Each structure stands twice: as structure tokens, then as C-alpha cells.
Amino acid sequence: MISMAPTPLYLPAEEANRVIRSPLFQRKDSKYNNNNNNNKDLKSSNDSIQPQLQSPTNDKSLRKSGSPWLSSQVNTNQAELMELSGKRLSTSSPKLCSEGVGGGVYFIQGEKDTHPISVFKPRDEENGIIGPNRSIMGMKAGTLPGEGAFKEVAIYLFDQIHNGYFGVPVTTLVEVQHPIWNNKQQVDGAATEKDSNSNEFGIKKIGSLQEYIVYEDTADEVGCSKFSVDDIHRIGLLDSLVLNCDRHSGNLLVVAKEDSDRLELVPIDHSLCLPSSDQLSDAWFDWINFPQSKVPFSEKEKQLVESIDIDKVIRQLHLKLPKLRLLCLETLKLTTLFVKKAVKAGLNLCQIGMAISRYQSLDEPSPLESIIANTIKTQKLSLSNSHFWTAYQNEIDLFINQNY
Image (cartoon, rainbow, N blue to C red; front, side):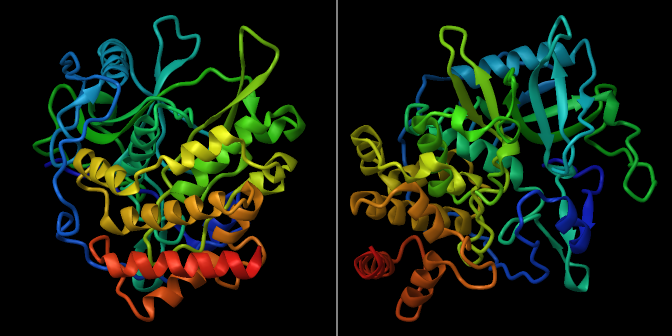
């Protein structure tokens, strides 16, 4: 068990409203169901996630995070990222990023210092909001500070289950030690106390480690006409399936392909995906306003969505990330079932985005929220309650038939 060293950076709700880039206000009220038994609704599974799994080379400054944080196995790309980052940490210090408001973000530099090779986001430095009665909430409704690292890894694993279709950079959960954190100051100015997790190698921190992508710009600096329909559909489907609450254009990297003149979009910053199933109000997608989102899905895209076995996906994610809350996995099933039915019925990406977000009115429940509320009137929402999922899909059919 690790010690959560420095206190996270918590912002008053009013301050968070000024700095978050989407127009959705940060909720000041919060309710979360206690989820102490995170295994009660899931059966064990031996399903493996491709590519081939292996153990990374051990390094004193960086190593994989063991159970209960993450399973002991990582895939080849994760192992290579960890090995390379560990070697660099043994000879250099992580550099704190001064931009953005997502909490502590550290760059691990490459050998020639031309650009970083990876990005480390510690759990204990994730931002939060001070709510009523001094309660601590995440930056979006249904999220909690400290769980963003799990979400970052979960979205990568979700992508890998689908053969990397969505293009999420390599991401894994790691434990990092470095002397840079030994004398780190807390927000109130008090020095962090040393404990069993601090030694000559530094304080141990658990967090997400992601491959650094060399990019030309972010999508908010490039006109959307430069982006392909395939890219917008790829990003939009990912965001819809995992209910991204923070898909502004600033976290879409624009990459120039060496073998062509086209630009490719790479999605990053997924810590605010998969909110609790009882708080789905803050989904936000900039791509709703892109003309590409109104283009019908291709047959390839339809087949991809149809092929998603959501129960199998949930078992695999729970096996790999046992600390990811079941409320978050419930959200994944809710959104995936909706997207599957919507795509099959011929809805386009824009229509799906408007149905699962409060795009029309921030003060009114989204159609997705209303569908869930109607279902909950007769059935309890639970991953193990088959009656709920049958009734829920019937409600989706009714909504689609009445509105499209």
C-alpha cells in the first residue's frame, strides 16, 4: 500500500468553472454509492488483452504497479515504455508541466532532451473541487480525484481490446520513485512528511504513464476542415462509448504523417471519462459542431461497433484494473448499449452526441439520462441485474422509434 504523499490540489467550484475549458459548470453537489465490494457483480475471466503480455525489466526508479492497483502483466508496448522511462529517470529528473489545470503532470525527457518520451500523472496530485461541507469531488460530476490514473489506463486497455482502432497512446499504471518529491511542498506550504515510502530513491508515487506524442499542434489551433471524416468518427465513437466529460479540442493532438500530406488526430487526457452511472450530466464533445459528425457511418465503423462484446470488455477491464469503480463500469455498459443500438438504427455521430450529452440545455437531463431514469423506476441498476439491461434496451428502442 502506498502513502498518498502530498495533498491534491483542490479548487473551489467557482475557480474550477473559470479554468475548465468546456462550458459545463462543475457541480457543487455530489452523491456516491459506497462501493467497497468491487467484485460482487463480476465473474472472474481469463480473457487476455492483446498484444502479447510480458513483465517489464525492473528499474529502481520505475516499476509496474502491482495488485491491487493493476494486474502483474503488461503488454509489450507498455513494458517497453516503462523500461525506457525507467532508464531516463535513473539519470534525470521529471519536469513538471506548467500548463493546464489537470493536476500534477510530469514529463520524462528523452536522451537528447529534444522532446519528452513519456508523461507521468501521479494519483495524489490530481485536481479536485471543494464541495459542500468541505467534501472533495472530481473536476466533473461523477468523478473523484485520484481515480483519473485508472481512467487513463482503462481507455488505453479498452482501445487495445479493439485492436488499437481508436489510436490511444500507450498508457500503463506505474509506481515511480524519485528524489524530486522528497522535499515537495504541500498546497498550504507545509513540507511533506517522510514515511516508509521515502528513501534515498525518493517518495513512491502511483500514477499513469503515457507515451509522449510528438505533435504539430492541438485541434483548437487548426480548422476542423483539415480533419478527415474517419478521424472525427474514430474519436467521436471512443468519446461516446466511454462518455468523455472533457473532449475539448485542446486534448486532440494534430500529428503530421510522414508518408502523406494528411493530418491525424490523437486523443489524449482521458482522466474524466467513465463518470459514475448516477451522474452523467457533464459529457461534452467539441466534435458535435464539426460537419464530419453529420456524415453517416461507414460499414467498417458499423461493424466495429456491432462487434463490441461489452460484458467481455467489462470483465477484462475489471481483471486488469480492480480498483476501477463498478459505477464507472456501469456507465461503460450504459453508453455502449446505447451507441450500438443508435448506430444500428442509422443515427449519425452528431445525433448520438446530442442524445448522450446536455448539448441542448445544461439544465435539463440528456435523453440518455432520461432513458436511464425511466428504467430505474422498475429495475435496479446493477451489472448483475439482467432484468435492468433488458428493460433499458427496450427504453432505448422506444426513444429511437419516437425521435428518429
